[in-house]
Image (cartoon, rainbow, N blue to C red; front, side, top):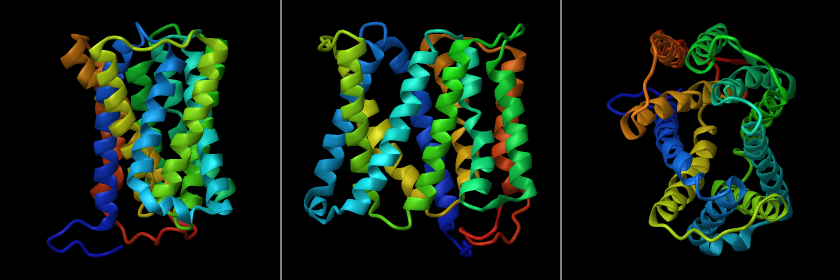
Length: 301
């Protein structure tokens, strides 16, 4: 890892960039929650990712001419994983509680180290494992309510967590090989097409008529999709999949924070303790930085 000197190392820049993305996702959670009262979820995601695709197309410009079959295949696979994650969660939310869904979705932080070992042959270091355990306990305190019952919706949301874990793992495999802008463009395009098809199959495709819905679509399309997934791809060039997952799990914390500010929601002592543990999980690997192996070798801290 580079010495920081007066400046942050690239790994630290990557981590801070991911934290900024979780802040955006946390903010948009409250916006989306209100917007979904007037727009069906698949229809909303159709608009969101179509806009994200158009934004990335404008950014890529002539770079699109460099697109080859190998890059297209990588973008298609990542897009399918991303579509699966959003779709499983959307269907699952119809049959389970928001608390269950929030906790189970966050279990991608557990799946990623397992898949990293199996698929990438990268064994997480002890501090990474500890950070995952602490963050998962915190997530449970924040999300789960007494009397937990497992139902079909929970299984669907678990599929969401697993699919998003695959997205993180294969992103790690592709970011060193392909143009990140084109990779993001393709993902947004694939998700847009599949979400639009799902909207026509499962819902009534409606046109938003209020300003707040369009504001949510613009914020989610530009910042929470196009920018967010490009930043994730860039960050994964610098840090491991396990580290990425531990940082991204901070999204529920910021969702709660903005829910309190924007929607007047409240949080119990269990929730505050859960937030504190999730933050601790993210910071564990920062307390006593060790000389980590470079990205791509056998042990990941």
